[in-house]
Length: 506
Ligand code: IMP
Figure 1 (cartoon, rainbow, N blue to C red):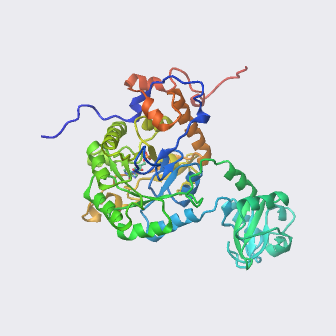
Figure 2 (tube, rainbow, N blue to C red):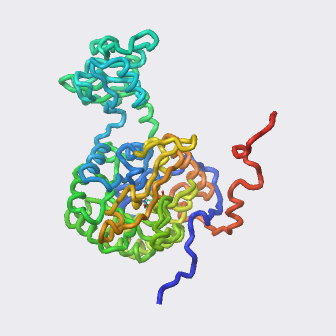
C-alpha cells in the first residue's frame, strides 16, 4: 500500500519566525552570513569552500552566465553557470570568470581611426559606454592609437562624417600603463594624473584593458567578495548525468571551483554514477553538489554517494509546472525541514557535515531567512536574479513597464534534455517549465544589499549573529490562512493603488 505522510507539505509562506531575545550587541552590522558550501568534518577542520553570503544563482540560461557570476561573486555569493550549452561554451564562460580581473576591463566599445563621428554616436547608444579606445584594427586588442571620450567632440559643432583620427585624443597625449601593473598602482596613476580611465597596453603597444577610476572605488567597497587563493572570483558550473566524462574535465580545466549535477529529480542511479566517475578520476579534489531531492531518503542516497552538497526542491520554482504535469513534488518548507534533519542525523553518525541548499520557490526576501532558519545552509534563486541588469536575458517593455525574460530549463524554449529527459523520443517530450517575464529590478548590487540587510535584521530579532546560531535559536510557527492575509498591508487604501489623492498638506 502507498505511504501517506501525516503532515501536509507546506511552503515558506505558511511559516513565520517568532522573535527571541536580542542582546544589545546583536546588530545587523555584526552579523556574519558566512556559510559552508561543501562537505567537511565539522569541528575538526575548516570547510574547504564557504560562501560569504548564503545565496547562489540558479543553473539556468536566463540567469547564470559569466557576467552574473562576476556580479554575484563580488557580493559574496556564487553563480552556477548553466549547463544547457555546448561544453566549449560553458567552459569558456567559466574561464572568463576566472580570468576576470576586478577593475581591469576588456574594452567592448572600440573604434578604428577611419570610423566617423556618426558611428561613435551609434556605438555609444548601443553599449552605453562613452570611453572608446581607438585601435589600428578597431578591436579591443589592437594597437592603441588614441581614445575618444565625450570631451573630444561636440555634436552641435562637428560634422557626423568627421573621421575619428581628426578628433580623438592621440596616443602621445595619453597616459598609459603596461601589462602587469597592479590595480593599486593603476589607481595611483589615475589619481596623480586626474584621469577617468587608464589604458593598459602590452610590450607591443596593443590594448589589453582599461582601468576606470570608479571601478577601483567599487572594488574597495566589496569586503565580502568571494575569491579563490589566487584572488580570482569563484564560480560554480552545472553538469548533467550524460556527458560528464567530457564536460567535467573541460570545466575543471577552465577553473570551475565547484560543480553541481543539475536535475529536476536527483534521487537516481544516474547521479550516483556521475559522482562515482568524478571520485574515480579526481578523488575529492573536484567538488560536486547533487540533487534535487525532497526527503530524507533522497538526501541519504546522495550523501552516501559522496555528494559535496545536496540541493532540495521539486516543483516549487516560479517557472515550474512539474507538479501540474507529473504530479510529483513537495512543499519547499516541509522538504527543507526534513532534509535538514537528515543532514544533522548524518553528521551525528559520521562526523561529516553536508551543506544543503534550498532551491527555488523564494518569493519574498523573508523566505530566505525562513529557509536558513529551517536548516538550509544556502539558497539557490532563479527568478530573483533574473530581474537584474546582470542576468543574460533581454530587457523588454511590456505594457509600459520594463521586464526581463525568464524561462524554465524545462520549457520548450530551453529544451534542456540533460535535465529532464529520462530517455525515449524527443518528439514525445512534454514541458515542465514556462517562458515568462519578471519585473526588471535594476542592478544586482543595490537589490542584494537590501535583501541581505533584511536577513541580518531578522537574525538579530532572533538573537543570532551567525547562521548556525540562527538555526539553533530560531522558533518557527505555522500560520493560519487568516494570519497570512494579515501579514501584508490590510484594511488601508494603498497610495500607489489609489487613482486620485487631493491636496495633502503636512
Ligand atoms: P525560482 O527561484 O523560484 O525561480 O526557481 C528556480 C529553480 O527552479 C531552479 O534553480 C531549478 O531548480 C528550478 N527550475 C528551473 N527551470 C525549471 C523548469 O523549467 N521547471 C521546473 N523547475 C525548474
